[in-house]
Length: 364
Image 1 (cartoon, one colour):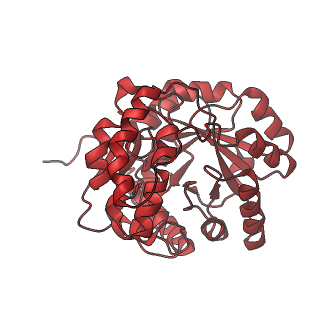
Image 2 (cartoon, one colour):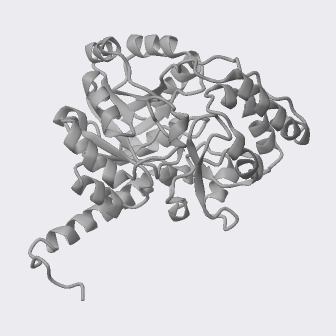
Image 3 (cartoon, one colour):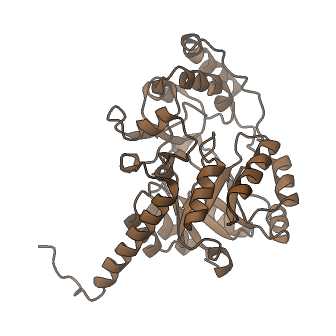
């Protein structure tokens, strides 16, 4: 990765921007202060809400940080399918004594307004999810001194990121919790994806951009593995979800290691886009029938999820989590960064100790 970008954070550790109130200023500040790159998530917030969080974060740390934006989504949803899904969810709304949301509540997430705020009040790093920003947008960020990072889930998507002029690509493996950052939601793929190590290798051969590897990383040894595979840094989300600074609901934090939730699955049940979550009742009952319709389904289920949280029912929440969720540690975020850095150093020492190992030896 370019030295100008890596100079922003001493350790190759990036805290993933987790929308929905998880990536609060306190979490980002703790990560930044410990030597990682903390992120705020602008997704689902108003432009003013994003701006207020940036001001709050700047009051907590003077170190560089990032802000994540969602790209506006094309109108590809089958509205009849959304209507059918709404009828299926009527029982959920009745159970939680609420109303379903309006699926037509907007699809651009206030992108242009948020971008204008970030150009008027530049931050060190802006990352993009659900697509590729235009070359014009990337150039405008560069003019105000902001680095641009863009998510990709395939080598072809990484090529599109490179063509945009972005400074680095976030290679997101299928192990990652939350929404897959696919540039286009193709229902025919069924939410299938490529594992992180394979993806990093493919992206490394496809583009010359620096790579930030994301997906299921919970330990410093895994950071060492993706660095060895060609990444310049690792992005961790679920690892920071259980920290006290995280804004995640207590039910969500507890579910990461609760034996009731034994596995994760990619599902459209909560938002209409493939996203990895702990398998609970809502996912099991509605996942097979959810249409490819984002953000319509997100708007539709939002009141139900909020009501489930208020009722203290984890079975109705979107429990976003990566495949390594059972390895979550309830450490303060700054301490977690330090532990990860120590584990990374130990893994590096172990790897260097193997450099003289005879080829083909052992393994009997």
